[in-house]
Image 1: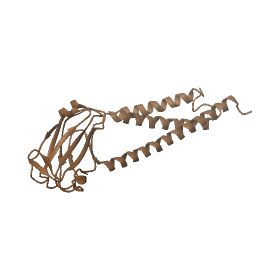
Image 2 (image 1 turned 90 degrees about the vertical axis):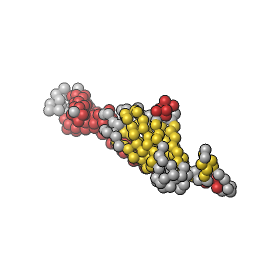
Image 3 (image 1 turned 120 degrees about the vertical axis):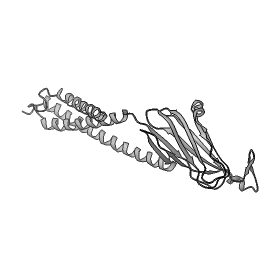
Image 4 (image 1 turned 45 degrees about the vertical axis):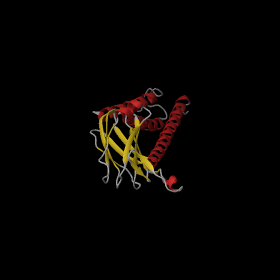
Length: 245
């Protein structure tokens, strides 16, 4: 059904492009107006623009559920303190000389809300102390995120995170604070009818750069075709105004 609607929209735009050209030459493509070669070429190019524009419009408007996780670079918060000699960081009844921070940004990158979200975050390695907090510029969103702590003292602690619903373009941050060695947090998530994306920060930058280059190339191609169609239509109109003697 979606593919059929997309094709109908593309064909409609192509027909509109041809109707605009027929307005210049009432006899149509098969008529005897002077410059029919230019008209035929312009019609084909206009149809291409119509089909391409219809496809891109339909693709942009379709419902998409995309849950994106971006894992930032891990930070050693105690590195600067170690340069100044002995120190100790205390949390309630626990003390450590190592403190690592891992940040994960969670975003609904689609255009539809996602319900009943559940995912897990694993911190590989031995971490006697590990804690996860959620933060967002939207306090109502942050208050609905539930984090279940793992059993502390074991290897590879795993936190379970849940959210009843997640609106389009909303985001929040997960901050993992732990002792032990530097570790790259691992995200596991599987949801129905939802695309789950897990990127590192550098991977996201590369992906956005590639997408930006493709958009520039596509924009240049469409602009070139539009200019050519305009030139051909102008030539055809000139031939009608000044027919050959």
